[in-house]
Length: 155
Image 1 (cartoon, rainbow, N blue to C red):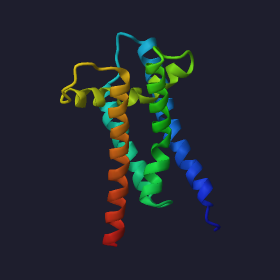
Image 2: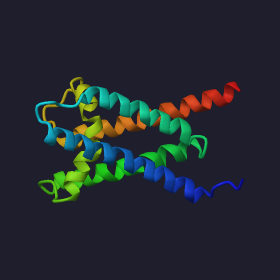
Image 3: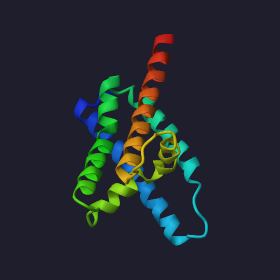
Image 4: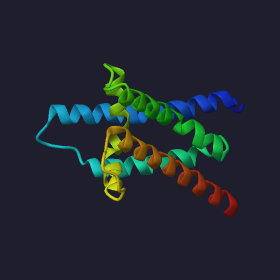
């Protein structure tokens, strides 16, 4: 069987970085707006996404180097983070893309907010929460790739 080119692997990681969080964010928004009396278990969802990102890092390490996995799997989150920062600096969220950028990080908001309790800052905005959520994604993918490397060393 012919091995995939590096470009195909990179594109797969970029899609993997965009699609699950976007779809889950829109699903959570739909859940909240369709059933406002029954909120989803946001903390459990945040933890599940963290673990899922670890699994993505673990499996992606089979395809590319650790640094490539960390870069390409998390590059979509970096792009969204910069879009959020640009929107906040411009004075408000933009129509269309502003909603998407907020929904992208929605699955991790609860866990990021819990961590924010320990950060001594007085002004909290969405960018700060999204930055912590990005840190969680980066940490999870780092842990996943590191576990994969430990397994490879042991065998």
